[in-house]
Length: 377
Image (cartoon, rainbow, N blue to C red):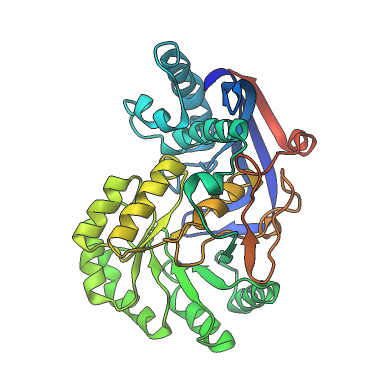
């Protein structure tokens, strides 16, 4: 693809309810949406095309080191200029974005956003869906939901009951010190052990808490996600030896190399693959392939994506190696109005878009209402 322009839109989209984790409470989604315009090869020669991408970074650097304002500056000052300069020397494609940007240290979510937009543009020009490009065989994926930390146990039970009534097939509870054993026990008592249940600590504990975390074993959880700090692979391996509940890594895995290290050390028997966190969907596919080769379960996590990222996540999760339900919920889980046609849950599943590219087109009139800043690079 030859890039002609990149439009950055910063959006602020209100959430339908506060979303609280161990590190923050979000009232809105502050995100970057990219529109890449240019020329690429189509079935009958070069064609003008556009592609859309979305940056997974949050407003503040609390989940990881990236944040929305920083991502916007990174794209403007480094990533887009580097790609523009590179394409004058050699052909540029989604498959080469990672290598071209490799010398820029970190900033995986910013890199993912631009790779995503170029990939969407190329696939649209070919008339090929993202699911077909990946080799996915399923046309729908099971839908799990992430439940934030609530103000009280009764409120938690009401919230979980509401999601189960909507058809979600798996519940994930956010936990933190002081909000862990009691809420999990209450959910099990209220809804029984047939409901697939897992917890996510977002690195809120240390190895000192091993005895406390062992108490979660009695609740037959699918997994405990990222209990310790992101750089504590060795300590995760030690913790795994003392728990019967499978440990899943999230923040610790930012690349296929990280995944390989975690598998080798025995630090994880499950990996949450978030494409934006690992630098893009192509690296996410590599992690999927690596995990499958080693018998490690994977599932697709989310970053409160709009319909753009949700569509791409659904296609990724349709790969055979994704054996656990992911955080691919309906649009109305987070938004009263999505920037694409809304995703809906049907029989506990989300349909995988089959149109060219990611299979969705942003509604620019809706984006205009949520846009707080725009620039053309």
